[in-house]
Length: 234
Image 1 (cartoon, rainbow, N blue to C red):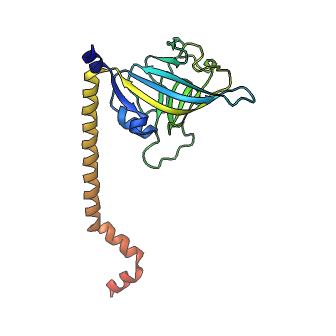
Image 2 (image 1 turned 90 degrees about the vertical axis):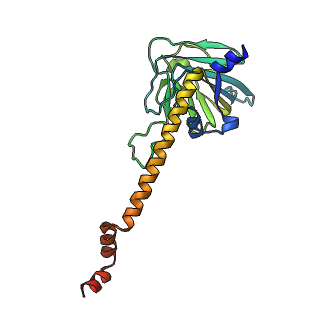
Image 3 (image 1 turned 45 degrees about the vertical axis):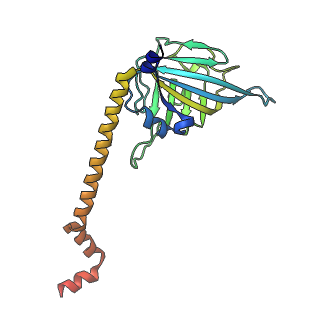
């Protein structure tokens, strides 16, 4: 039984071990195309006035596919979970398919007139997600099920009302359910990405070396130093 469990379930990412933040999370789960269970342990303040009581809780989301860097919701299926202090499963409602949202910063300096939120979300719509984890993995926002038509309605956290619950994250943990095959595919993916990175680095270095002896560089230097041009004309 232990062998079977080890071959099917594996810890893909744990913030207390691998560090917090979307980039660290992405470095561990990128290329994993099997089902993933993400668990979020957080602490929130009581939403009632004049209350200083803190509440600790754990929620989760099961995806039936790997994460992708996209600026839109995607996914074919999934479930949300209230795990602690009360366990409850929220299956797909069948009304919408906004199962997963995972968006990283664009590489390079690209101007965006309407930048999309950077982080991970489940259910709801962009800007009004049912669960939203910020890019630093420092905080999570949980909204009322009224904003979400993808997952079934119900309370994800204790004493949840219409006001969004903002909480501090203490731990994020991801478990892979794709077994040995998904892990092997991810390993191959990472090796290819590393090879491409090394090839691009070699090309960049070669281009830099060629630039030092290129006519374009000489022209740039001559244009920037007009006295040099006059001296050479004489």
